[in-house]
Figure 1 (cartoon, rainbow, N blue to C red):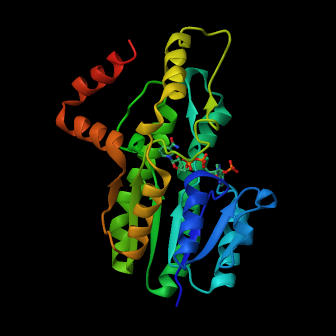
Figure 2: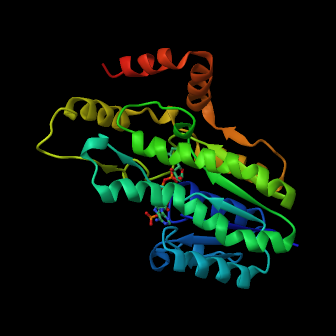
Length: 272
Ligand SMILES: NC(=O)c1ccc[n+]([C@@H]2O[C@H](COP(=O)([O-])OP(=O)(O)OC[C@H]3O[C@@H](n4cnc5c(N)ncnc54)[C@H](OP(=O)(O)O)[C@@H]3O)[C@@H](O)[C@H]2O)c1
C-alpha cells in the first residue's frame, strides 16, 4: 500500500519539490499551503491533494490535519518545511516581526506535531522530519539573530522530544540545509529597518551584498535535499541530523573544531 506524507509550505522551493518527488515515487502527498487557490501544478497530480494551511493558524492546523487523514486514511510522515526569514538588527525589529519569526519557524512545527501525535499514537508510529538549517546549529552571518533563534529552538525542540516519542515508535529527524537552488527564501526575507537608526546600515549593506552575490554553485541543489528527505522518510537513512552540502558541512566542522570565542571572532572578521 502507498505511504503518505503531509508537507507544509508546498507553494514553492523545497516544499513544492518534495511534493512533486514523493508523488513521482508513488507516495500519496497531502500538500499544504497558505494559498491553494493559486496552485496550478500540484493540483493536477493524481496522488496529491492540496489543502489550505497557515501553520500559525490553529483552526487551519486542525482542519488540514483532519482533511489529510480523511483523504488518505493514514499519514506516515509529516515534513515540517514551512519557514521564513527575518533579518536585520534586533533593535530595529518590530514586535510583530519578532513574534512572526517564532510563530512560523518554531511554533508552526510545534502546532503540527501536536496535531498529528494522536494520529501517530493510534497508528503505533510515524515520523516528523523538521526542516531546520545549518543556521540552527551555528551562526554564520551578522543580523540573523531572530532566524538563528527560530531554528536553534527547532533543534532543541526536536532533540528534546526524542525521549518522549521514542517509546511510542515516533521518529524525529532534522534536515540542515543552506540556500538551495530552487527557492524564493531570500526574496521572502523580512528586513528590520528604522530610518532614524543608521548605526547598523553598513553591516546590513554588507549582508545584503553577500546574499545577492552568493554564487549559485554554493547553493545546495534542491533535488539533493529532497533525496535526503526521501531517504529519511523511507528509513534508508536513520540519521537524526542530516547536514546538506559542502558549505553547511564545512561550517559545522569549523564550529566544532574551534573554541566558541575564536569562531565568533572569525565570522565577525568576515564582515569587519
Ligand atoms: N533557502 C534557504 O536559504 C534556506 C536555508 C536553510 C533553511 N531553509 C529552510 O527551508 C525551508 C523551506 O524554505 P525554502 O528554501 O523552500 O524557501 P521558500 O521557497 O520561501 O519556501 C517557504 C515556504 O514556506 C511557506 N510559508 C511561509 N510562511 C508560512 C506559514 N505561516 N504557513 C504555511 N506556510 C508558510 C511559504 O509559503 P507562501 O508562498 O505562502 O509564503 C513557502 O511555501 C524553510 O523552513 C526554511 O527556513 C531555507
